[in-house]
Structure formats: C-alpha cells, structure tokens
Length: 402
Image (cartoon, rainbow, N blue to C red; front, top):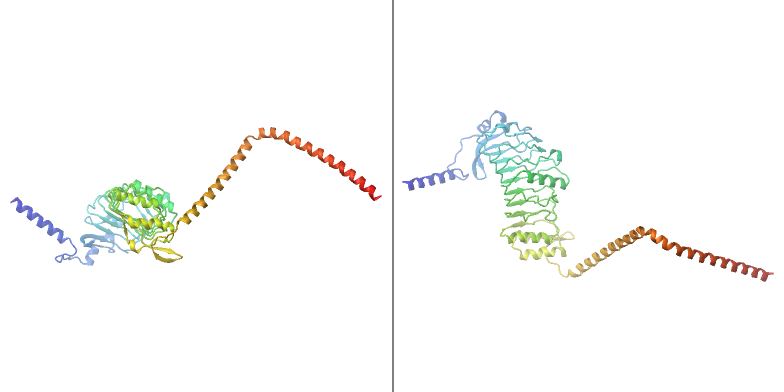
C-alpha cells in the first residue's frame, strides 16, 4: 500500500510540474487582456496586466507595467499577493521612496523584480522591504546617482535570497573613481552572500578603488564586465573561489599583463573550471602581446571565441600572431631605463652634495677664508708689479718718440 501511495505521489508531482511548463499543450488560460487589467485593482488605473502567463518557460503570475506612464510607485504597495514576477519598466520614477511594496509582508511568492529603464536616480535605504524571497533584481538602464550624499550603501541588504543582480548601464555618467566607490560600499554593506550572477556592463568602469571589491560575494559564479573601459584586472578574483565565468568583452585591453595571466591560471590550479571572454578588445600587434599569445596555447582556462581574437596594427586587423626578434627591443628598453635611472641618481647625488655643503658651511667658510685672503694678496702684489712695469714702458716709449 505504501508503495502505491509513493508511486501515486510521484505521478502527481510529475503532472504538476508538466502543467507548469509553457510547452504543455493541455494548458488553457481563460484570462482575457481586459480581465487582466481589472485583476490588478483600482490603484493600477487599468495601465497594467496582472495574469498568469508564460515567463521564462514557466507559467507564473506576472504583473506587467511596461511603459505604463507612472511617475510614482504608489501602485506597487497594492500588488496582488500571488505576484511572482513584477515588470515595472519604461516609467519615470526619479526617486524610490521607503517601503515601495508597502509595510506588510504580503508577497510570499515574489521572485523577480524588473525595474529597469525608469530613470531612477536615488534608491532610499529603506526602499526594499519584504523582499527576502526575491531571487532576481533588474535595475538596468537607470541613472543612479554617484553623489555621496545620495548614496545608500545598504540599499540591497534585505535581499537575503538574491541570486542575480543586474546593473547594466545603471549609473549616471561620472568619474570612474566615484562609481568604484559606490559599488564598493554596496557590495561591502549589502550582505549579498547568496549572489551567483552580477551584471555590470556598459558602466564605463576603468578601475576599482578597492581591489577586493568583489570579495564580499563569496558564491559568485558569473561576473559580467563587458563594454567597460578596463585595461587590466584592477580587482582581485583569487578570492572568488566559485567563479566560473568572467566576461571582459569590448573593453580597452591592448595586452594582458603576466600578473593577470598567472592569476587566472591560479584559479584553475584550485580545481576551478573558469571561462573568460576577451572578444572585441583592441589588442595591439606588438611584442607586449607575446606573453598572452603563448598563454593561450598552454593555459587550462577556457577562453571563449579564442580563434576569433584579433590584434591591430595601424588600424588594420590581424589574427593573433607572435612577433619574433623582440630581444633587441627589450635591450633597448632596458638601456633606456638604465639611462633614466642614472640621470635620477645623479640628481639625487648633486642634491646630497649641496645639502652637505649647506650643513657644513661654517666649517668650510673658516677653512676657505685664509686661502681666499692669500690669493687676494698675491693678486694685489701682481697688480702693483704690473703697474710699475706699465709706467716704465710708457717712460721709455716717450723718450723714444722724442
């Protein structure tokens, strides 16, 4: 009998799972679009659709307010309590207030929040409450301020189950250091320990103030940094023990320095399967690219689109190739460096001599004064003798004329 119940339970579970798939031919929805508008409630003013629909290959209850013309988040505090996915995009919300989803914990099934492309400039520290079950937050294409006075480091601290954070082109244009400081404060203070996927594309990132900026994300698997302005790995990835993919497409790498190559190889040695993507970086065809080319042929790191990587010489694209006879260039570079070093050392030596003379000026003056006096006396005697000789010559010349 127990065996019968176990089999029956498995059949029911499989049927339930199948019925939730978008490709289930037995699925039929009786909800019409007009009904879906009214199901949202009066606070949404018939601008949104609230219905069970296909989202990521599963039927889920979705509230969709795309391009609905809202300039306030007031309706969001009245979401249907069965909401699983919130799509609130293409509106005009410069500032998100406190408790954007209300003060009651009435959204037990909410898993996805998409608030991209809303021109958001500021997210208050207490904006997101009752989001402890949310697994994905999308804030792409907003205009988040880099002003320290409008910065709220704990803005994501209530997303204790967050698995994906999307911040593609999410910040206003500003100095890279300000953006680096903002990201550092967010990751350090928001306790995103469950995060496995982070998107930071198209943010003009060229450096990070703190090289350990990502080290507070211990479960991070995928880090997307494409379409930025990075020239090297200005951040520590050795602390990301679960990292599987590093996206560096379309940055500003002209070469890959050997330190970064060793860092990536070190991850593989710790039994990590890591992939990296350098596609569409402006590599320069020069001797400086040789270490990277050699590394590509022997590394255990999986380099995506490796065969499609290109380097550029005089704006002409070439397949990656190793340049021969780089030794003279290296020697000349070393000689140049030695010349510069010698020049700097000479300046330092002159400075030290001048400083020594200044410190010992009293003693030197006492020793030099007698010598100068002696020289002056000799000069005077010589002048007198020269004057006498000149007078005798003039007398003799006068007599000769007469």
